[in-house]
Image 1: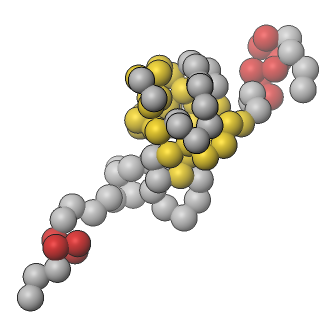
Image 2: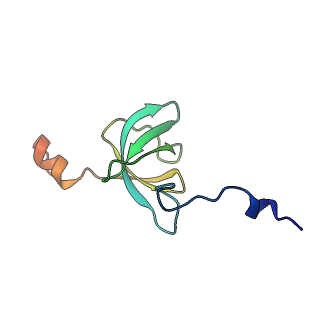
Image 3: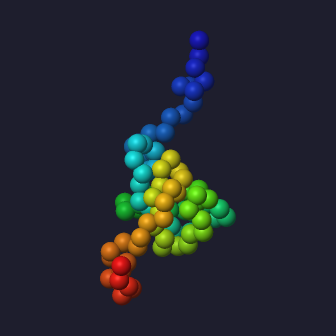
Amino acid sequence: MSDPVRDEAVCSLEPGCITCGDVAVPLTVTTVEGSDARCRDEQGREELVATELVGDVGPGDRVLVHAGVAIERLAPAASDDVRTGDSA
């Protein structure tokens, strides 16, 4: 007997979805698309992320993402503080 869950495409870690797995991944918002945001990781890979749980975001914001959903807003990276002259 066929199992429809197993017969469907499975997300692959290589090159697959960058936020699937057992961990959350820090990403940077590049653009906002309605209630979602296109985000990029440190390797330059991009993914569309649901942002309803963290509220409004904008380009440059950092979010912690799990399974395509932003679950927490992150503080700016230390390099952002140096570049803008802000302090934590």
